[in-house]
Length: 343
Ligand code: TLP
Image (cartoon, rainbow, N blue to C red):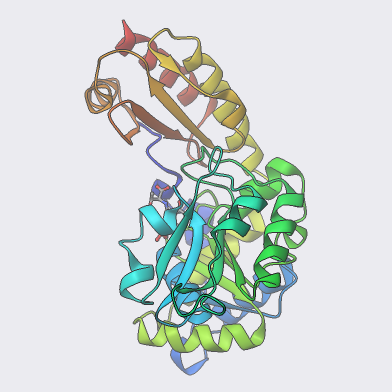
């Protein structure tokens, strides 16, 4: 079976399971877990920030960041297809009491001037506007196709946020994919961001876990919100060990996933029934437009009969994601399956 539904489907490899087995653990709510402490310090160093906090999921990491940066009644600014807006259950509203100002992006990437236009401040509005206090950027952009922000746009967006007394948060669920694809040091990418959320459980191949990174002051606030959101874990060094293993071993290999995604994308784009915006295939994702009358869900079914699994993200949109378990042979088989279902 070729499982291209997401890079979240990865399972710990034998070596990762060995690391899990050997993990030293302690009660992390009491601050006693040496593996978690090591992981948090390592990622903070890697990103050039003061501190980090291990959390159960990317969704919780973003939710904590939003809660820590805002007050109820504030407004967050984010791209109109961002994970925070589309896929987090409206957590910004329910958990933080925030409204959202949506910015249209091109392949999920916001233009700095559009971010500037979207920030509304309570001050000077005769009390009419909510207070825009946080700008969220997603890098890579999932619904954008796994696209990467140009560095100058990231820097400019952070500056616009700060000039307008907003914090700048990066949903870097796939930050290392962006770093590998653009050849940029991750610390440089996030230099001007106040908080960054990283997922260990996607392309990096760990089974569970995300990390929120920022200043010591921000992380101590985040720590309190993690507690209130029920995200304090006890002997979670067993899962942090998988994250450490992933950071030590699985970053540079992301380039292979990107290469395979490009091969898959070009071949599918050659098939009459499908079209792929090849410029948007910058990392490990391939968004495939279905050109005929056939519904994407029907194609998902037909592909699964060929043992190839993808997701339908709309009536005419499929998504295929490469990851650590996808081999060259899987790509050949997937291309064949797409040919078979299109005939
Ligand atoms: N993305 C998942 C689904 O939720 C859509 C996927 O299969 O791509 N930020 C970004 C950019 C994400 O893509 C995801 C997960 C998250 C945050 C949330 O991470 P988790 O699943 O750990 O809560």
